[in-house]
Length: 104
Image (cartoon, rainbow, N blue to C red; front, side, top):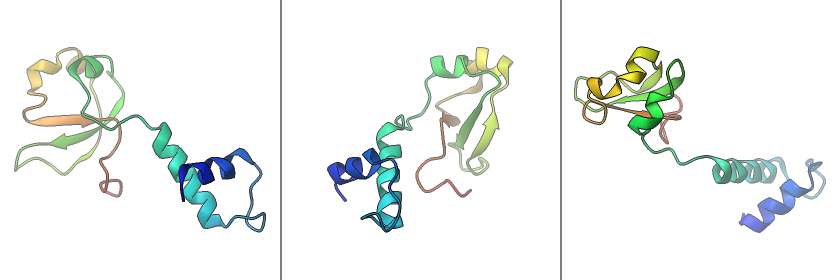
């Protein structure tokens, strides 16, 4: 499916199977729209983390003995002093799971 076909499907808003498209095509168009609208999933910056106290983030440990990637809530105190916790050296934070890690 190309972008134009996805746009055509989504513009109809009432598209249902049997209306010219299959569920598979409708779902593919929706997935393409989600990808296009999603923010890039790059590691959060220290500045972004400072503003995220009390919010969830996807934690990825960078050391061999680190726990597997997981959701965590950033403690507001840690958020204000993130540079004291070796961010970028021992761990990284993301907005959502990395590609292929959604099921962990």
